[in-house]
Length: 90
Image 1 (cartoon, rainbow, N blue to C red):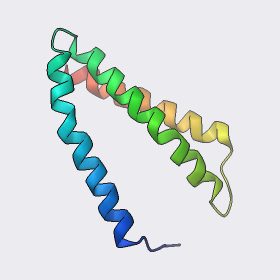
Image 2 (cartoon, rainbow, N blue to C red; image 1 turned 90 degrees about the vertical axis):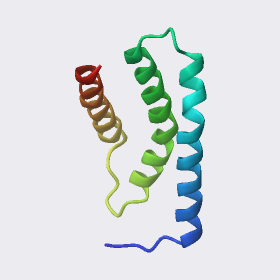
Image 3 (cartoon, rainbow, N blue to C red; image 1 turned 120 degrees about the vertical axis):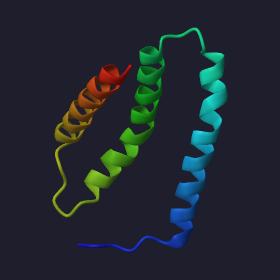
Image 4 (cartoon, helix red, strand yellow; image 1 turned 45 degrees about the horizontal axis):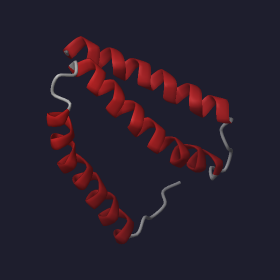
C-alpha cells in the first residue's frame, strides 16, 4: 500500500542528508592516520545506530509487525554484507 509523504518531510530529509555528507570530509581529514577500513566501520556503525530506532518504529507501524529480532537480524546481516563490500574495495 503506497502512502504519501509530505513535501516538507522530503525536503528536511534531503537537507539533513546533504548536510551530513558535507560535514563528513573535515572529520575524515582529522582522522587521516586512521586505516580506511576502521573509518568506514565507525561511520557505518554510527549510522546504523542512528537508523535503528526509525527501523524499529517503522516495523511496529506495519499492518503485520515484524518481530523485533527479525528486524535486528536483517540489519546485522545487511551490515555484514556491506562490510564485506567495503573490505573488498579497500
